[in-house]
Image (cartoon, rainbow, N blue to C red):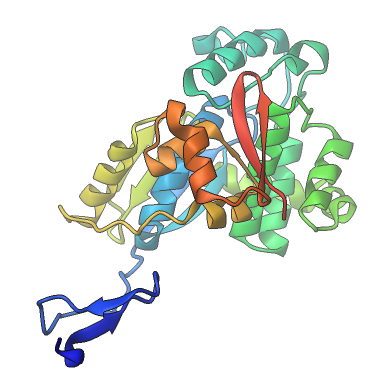
Length: 308
């Protein structure tokens, strides 16, 4: 054996004979992020909750090609006598419950929805203002994490995120000062920051949720409204970049993803790793150590939490 032709794989630690190619051209240049992606959303948008599995995979694998901006759209300022969302037959809070359940059943991202009958969310503005204050005081990533936690509490665990105490609890569990952040969000600065997002939404021409707009430096791009298949977002990015071939990043390991997200529903894991629903438990057992996670169930769907 020619010992000069040996190599060790840094990921596996396995050493062996190197490949036949003696020289490989590599490029360490990172792609220029000259694409802006605007995600127009709202904390109580059920269809935004439904696209979480697909949108997460898209941002994990292709996020190195764009700068993402999460924009609050103001879905519900308050209830009034007229129709709120006539296209979906929503005139009063109780109308939301059935619509949400349908979205949850179709997407398999669990939605209880019964609080909209018993203890309805009165406005999406309080939760949106908290998002903006966290974004201002910390960063986009932490604000986006808060948005995820708020949606979990609302849709899966049936908590009223227009309630001040619920918002404080969500923020506290993130290791932040919930009382201070929620108090600041209730000051004029909270609404001022939110109004800036509303102005941006109008400029972008977004009229529904979710809306994803990808735009290049020439202000030309694509607008994607509503939930779409994963390939739809990838094709949109290719169009904006003017490239036919985009190399995605490898999906993160399930252990690192769960450690980051804290909670993942079965559907999210299935979409991220191309796993069939029937194979999810065997996949989990293969990828995670038994002491690193817990399996739970809600509304007929499995979900997994980290024990760390």
